[in-house]
Length: 599
Image 1 (tube, helix red, strand yellow):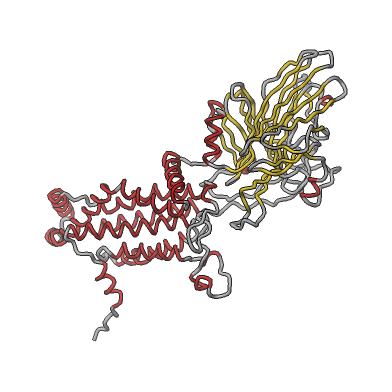
Image 2 (tube, helix red, strand yellow):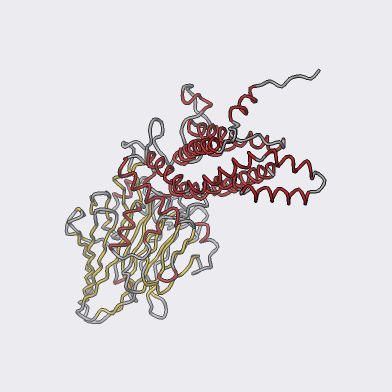
């Protein structure tokens, strides 16, 4: 039965490796080629029945000259500068597009001197990504469009100084857009129309976020990247860029999905750490289309769009109407998103972060980590403390498990005697063994329990390290400058002493090696399996895990190493208490002995 127990553990570990490898390291999706082209700058149109229609995502326009650089694209329009606490950038007065947003607190690398993260980029530049607001109506030529040049009442938008944009169409309609920004990443856009035309008109407010070209994605199943939104009672809906190609046609050139009459929610795009979202009035119904426009020529990029419309309003002659919409552009900070959800009443706004199916573990785990971080100032230390807390929570269960394992070792002689006595009667042998277990109050599967306990916490911590921006560029000590990135050192260049770069698959750093050593010691505390296949598997298991976890986030490897170390201490103390021999030293000595030659 001891051999069977070892086999069960071996199978469980092997299965964990196979599942983990497939789940976390399935080959990333091939990056689609990033090509740059401009959108057709068409105004909102009207259908034959007089209803307003949404502007199509667009395709490459042969008469549009692309800007050679992002700076040149920015210079093609007069602008209002944005300078808030966390955002810098500008709004184009031509089209009134939000197309230049950079994040002051985030950099491309761990170096503070590296460039800030850029989220929004003009549509005429490479990888265009921008937001636009406006009105749909039966006479699109009377409405502001992408070519409209607005006037601004001041040159800079700051937290306490909103900017008002104005456009007079010369036909009795005056459009005003009041834009405010808070201390984080939320813009408030109030669109107002003054109707001096003498006749009433119907207008439909819209807002869209558009991306030109298929963005680079991490390509892991554990993380959603693409279009998403919360649509009232329909809840969270997610579409990857690849998924959109499988959706039905919305028009001759567009593919996508419609979400009608949603009350409460939002819609936008998400990357790993950054996101954008249009947030309509939470008390009225809104319609959303998540779509992709197929290029008309092979060299043009695909165009992705999140399009939101709010209910049509009738503007009386000499009357005024207005609608307020919010736009989020920034970092997916957990506390910031939670505050927006709670203070602004935005339905499930925290789901901009992909917490996964095990959100009931990942969210509390992050909150505990974040709380400890506030006291320690180091997320690495917070991980160590959380590991101790997890061990403490599961201590009674683990203690019982290790005690049962110790009892199993204590009755090994009786088990061997039963096997020898009933060697030819397997049924009777199993019956006698079960009686022995019952008599000694032993659970033969208890040895698997400590491993099974770790797996959910392991996956949850991996998820937290992978998806939360708080872990990005969070340092530990020494050479670990980013807990969300793999250990950058490698055994194969003597941890940087030799002056050459090591291929990624050979980046076996210090912490993965420490993890492998702790796993090796933990296994050697038990008797060697008698089955040669099991023995070989157990011998190579630490090596396999060392190579596999080398490319995992350093924070996860530190957790696993520290957890192994605590488990070793716990198991050693329990075995000594139960009077069971610790096999570690004998197993290590046997490894150093040379096999004697026969004859």
